Amino acid sequence: MEWVTLTSHALACPDPSSNVESHPRTRLLQSRWARAIYSPRSSMYEPDINPADLNTRWDTILLSTRDLSQDIPINFEETTGVVVSTACFSDGVYTLNKFTCLANLLAFGYRRLVVDLFWLTADDAGDGMWHFCPSSDPLESGGVVTTTTTTTTNQNTSPTAAAAAAFLKSRATSGKYKCDKHLDATALFAFLSDWVSRTEYNLLASVATVVFNLHNDQSRPVTQGPQSVNAPAKLSSISGFPNSLIYTPHQLHQDRVNLNSSWLNGGNAGDDEARYFNVVRRSDGGLSSVDAWPSGSFLAFDVHHRLLLAFGDVRVAGFDPAADSRLIFQPEEIGWPPETHDDGKERCYFDANITDLKNANTSWAELIDSDFKSFSKEKVLEATDCGYSILVNTTLDKDEDYFSLMEATVWSWAKGEPASSPPTGGGGGSGGPFEDDMFRCAAMATNDAARWSVVDCNQRLYPACRVNDLPYKWTLGTRITRYFEAPYLCPPHSAFDVPRTALENRHLRAAAKSAGLGDGDKVWLDYQSLAVPECWVTGGENAQCPYKASDIGNKTIIVPTVAAIILLIVAGLMAFAKLGNRRIEKARKKRRKMVRRAGEYEYEGVPT
Image 1 (cartoon, one colour):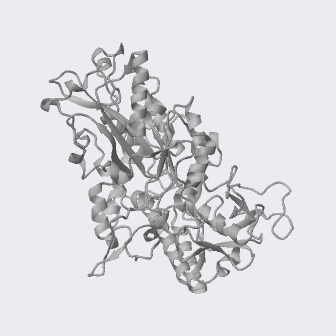
Image 2 (tube, rainbow, N blue to C red):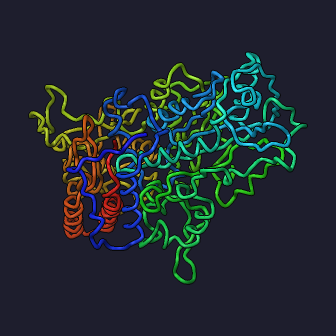
């Protein structure tokens, strides 16, 4: 058991006796705060590797990437996934301490977890449960046993199902499993709930998708499959099912029917989110869609649903995934199965001549490695730049190796970036020495890698300009300039901006090359940390960081402050009056939205 510790100088707890506004969200936050302070709990989410020890810039990379994609629908975000069986259970040992491996993967930034569960019963008449262990024999004996597994595959088997079958076959060869009977679906739900609870902070909150591959007991022939008395249970009926934490197919349908009351609340069909899906205006003036998905920011900060659950491969006699269709997404709804990595024969979604989203639709585009072709870091980088999310299905030597693959998915910052100080002996934009307080602006190199670096804001570069608010259509400013004048030099029908996805980044690089820039050149991005070091924001030079840097123990974390909110609103109003165009108005609205979401989490506490 442990107590959550808080520092009084970082956040102010509302006085329980005060007459606080009785808004439902206010009451929810107060309730969470009270639980954080007064409730002892046992922890299941306990990573034993600190990613910052492997890459000192990692916290900033994850935060800046998350904030950049705040208005991108989750089906277009590049996320990295992992098959849990191959990453954490390749030795055939199924014990609760393996959750440390899963915790490390989440801490590294993996946000799509493919979990293999097996329907096991003690006997034909006994109650069953979904277990990580493939065989009921070790559960009956309470330890390590020699088992004979029965695996079935067919030519239509998906990549992860084939991998699971290959793994089970390898275990059958060695003939041994070690299984803890407590490592079941209930334990997984408790672990996921603890992950949400322990990362329910402005800097850490993100959305994860869990895909379930379901199998029969591998120690019993399929012909002896479950009878009606012990038919496989619906996942939603399992104890601890995280109803309050999940975003469901039913909620998605309701949100799509009335976008005005969901993630386009107060907006219109031209909002950033709507670039990626079809919007229909109904006769009553409301907006709806048949293919829309919310952004991760909407899920994490507006409706507080940080988990999506989905079925992958279901190969269990007597189980009907449709019975859970209101709560758990069906395979086709989340793009299952993924495409298999096959010696570069997979499609690349990037084509410099195709800037229409309909012809380069990467919705739920995912690439998985195979037994014959595991991912190298170079292949991960290439696939990410082609618009794929990566699903790792390889057993590596140690958990840190999975971090190396995760690093390779970073499509924005170059290695060692974002740098916190200028290079030794470097020169500023005007030929003089760097001014450290001006070493706060981001630029993209126009070479093949197209990665970003921190440069002096007084350097003179071409601005990156998004055309007509389209994801894949870019041009450059009319001439080179300092960062501060960049918003004024974009051609008509374009605006100073920054790529939000890897594919957008590749299209910007193509536009720069078409404009005649060489491999040694760079272009300005609408991305700066002028207000607070290492807090990267969009919206021009007056955009303020919605967080405040505070030193908590040995780790600098960021929490929202009222001062930042006031400064941001004032800066937004000034920018609107000064620039007076639609794009700047939209940027102001987005900054207010980000600060509003951060402000609503003001009393969420800080990491222990």
